Length: 156
Figure 1: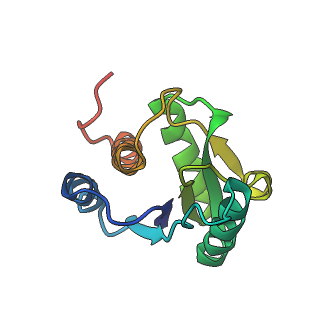
Figure 2: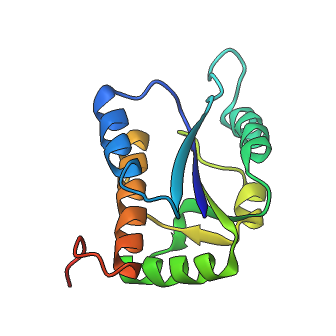
């Protein structure tokens, strides 16, 4: 299985890249994690939030791998526990599809992309910097897989 994270935003601080890579390298051969950065639309100069979201939407749609379950992170999405994420991962693994998680830009995501999602997932009710979301998502995906593999990383 391949898990792709599409994240609007580039040029993250070094600590974000290092922390993300630390978790990404923990995934084994059976499951790979790949981050694809999506160029954010510049704001100002007549570019409204709506126009920016539309431009980012087009870039995101073009980057979604074919035959992927689409999980969109949204503040109004389902608020799962780590155990529920692990259960969903088990089902997704059994289905044989790849996964694609989407992290939106500063102004959010288009309603069209949210409607297209197989799952809308709330990572946290807190507002977080986009770089932190990448790290937290990678860690939670690794944790969910470690639960499925009976690895002692996660403790109840």
